[in-house]
Image 1 (spheres, rainbow, N blue to C red):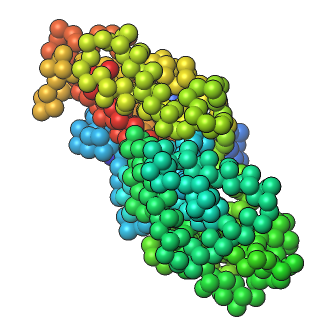
Image 2 (image 1 turned 180 degrees about the vertical axis):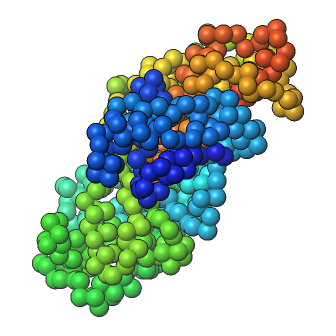
Image 3 (image 1 turned 135 degrees about the horizontal axis):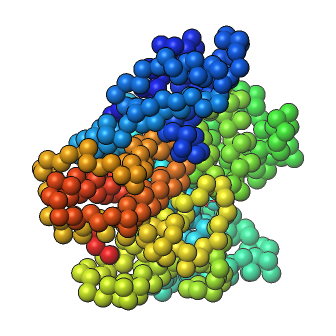
Length: 565
Ligand code: ARG
């Protein structure tokens, strides 16, 4: 498709003696639309021209040829402003969307490159709680974004399925557990066993040995220990998959911490060979003082490995197995230090690909009403939150549109979509408060608002008997509302690239809001289904284009687009 910045570079380079790259970087989008769609500041040229910037802008602008895509080029103060030609742009953009439909903006930019996105990474035998929402939806969106850009994309769930707590669980199960009972409500029962054993340990420290022994057995491959651990893992995954199913998420690999247990000795050996290990109070550590960080423990004084050791082994395994171009970890900011230490150690080991390992962190989520749908303790299960969202959406639909077909399916798409959209609407590093009212509102910057716009267009196309094979004349789309709408569609593909470069799905959610708002303004300002058949066809062609772009954008966020709401 036409690249307007590139067109501007072509026009400018005839008159300006700067490297193309520099011209391209100089092109800005003015805040005030009166100043055009793009502008180029000329300050940099003052040295060469030896003139006041406004005179330079005037001189250059006077000589430029505007070409096919610009209606006018004007100097204002130190800027040269470019006004896009509406007709040419509309015809280009619509043609491109008709061609690619909901794959508009997809490309083969990443062809031949592998991107790993590790996300969700839940902990076996522990609740999949609301705190995991963020990693799960941010990661899933990044996965779709990279895929859309043609990367070979691998989704990994680095399960927390290793550690002394499994020794505790097995010991507790041996004392008090009953398989049948546990299977009725696995996670809560595991939680109970865990809490109960912890208490016992505190009262009677000798019980710690019991847990340690079971963990040792597990590590050594003892049949009973492994069987129980596998049973816990299967049960937990069955529970977790209920959430992944609701969210429509699948993984390519569930290789978690335990998977790396037999790969750790080699890493420890390598660290030793590279003289990176130091003995400290019986533990083997990597001293990171000169890099301003606390030391990292690789082997504890009791001889066991750590979370960090497993992450070192995992990184190396992933490089060997996938030859990744990027290896992304979507994990909360509370693990920032861990990932800084880990990356530094990979660097010290001499791995230049350490730089391709990226910790994508994010802020905290808190809730207004913890009481709502809590099961036990203070844990808010994500499954309960999602089901509540569906239920509440169903109530809203009953009021707004009681005759809607497939109410349950729509309530699911909208309820879940609302929760995802709210999470992805801000820069990921920002904390946010989960609010039912804001999340589920059909107005404002929400998922339901975007989905509703989509459904509105869908029924408009039906009412207007839209046919994709009909010819249309894009020149008839010349109002200022149509101009703004087309421009926001034009900008969409770039937001996918921006999102991938900054690991920020919110570029896409914001652009979707922009498009939906522009559409609704357009829709409210003048009727679409007009008498004039030619005009109606052109307008419907634009509606159809908007519909495809919304669908594409929602898919990149991991959200479905129901045809009716
Ligand atoms: N399971 C961990 C947790 O819930 C997150 C794992 C993050 N990934 C990693 N490779 N360390 O905190």
